[in-house]
Length: 423
Image (cartoon, rainbow, N blue to C red; front, top):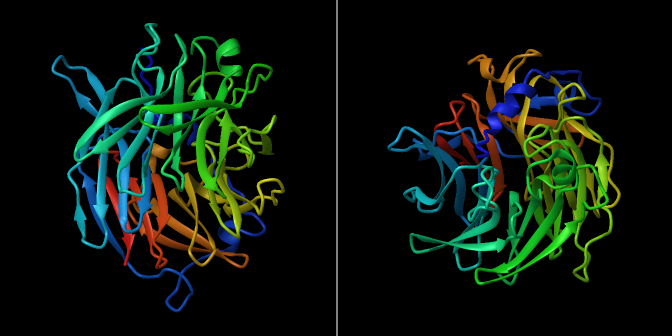
């Protein structure tokens, strides 16, 4: 069976350190926010959503109105001494200050991310790699699955399946204006061999609702060897799905490389070729995408092989991308970056800082130096604000209409699932 742990991959990457500052970012251009500055300055309200969510796995968050929803994984001991991975859902009503009880969505052996959305009726949906198996002994889950919530009951629908093959890795989901769900995911064929399976992997997008799905190929890997579709991040832009991702030619948890972008055409077709926005030998947790009407696209990623610099890419149209702005370029940090547009059209990035010093292991971050940071750019200067002085892993970020930031994350023990809400 393919039991995976993303933290093991990050552990091998965390020795890469930031040791240079960029001309328009990092410590040279970053300063602490001060009273009187434009932007969010108030303290934070912290909410514990699940105090027993042990597991080094990525989380997903969505915000609709003032309701926050999070999907995440937790390790659960079985009666025979084994471990299964439990996919859970938790939500929080900011206006009422009320948290729901964490719910079990599914149990799986493999973890390749999840993605949660709330449709216009408030119904929650979670996408993930789920059952049934492809019939092999390696992959006990092999389909792109969407679980939908009615009351407190979750029912599963197979959004995409390919006979005796593996689809559904790194699911990323959005919901459109008609409440249609769109799920992007990686297809690794039989999931066994580096060349024919991983190097020629596909990027798919399934659309529809439970009971009626249509699966299309967004990036066809038949004549490519890069290993497309890894660590997807999708948004809806002018009604069309847009996706950024890295390539992973060597396997399901191969080092993610480069930053790619593709957006569906208005006629419903996909471009023949994705855009290779930037080269990178290691994007760590993969690129993250944001879009806003009238402003454009943002992509944030940690470039481990370029001095561990946290970078921001921008484009008004998804075609022309400006040079990378360095958000952070010194010390050891920039982990699990997530990007969003603020309501005042300023770009914002949240991430985990390990140490002010270079070359510090992610497992040895000094207690007085690691923290969860939120940064935003005013003209050419990055403002920074401490969200949680104890740090935070697997960060997610969104903004309320009034400009307050909302972050979901796990604490540095990877056990406690938390929210930080700006007052």
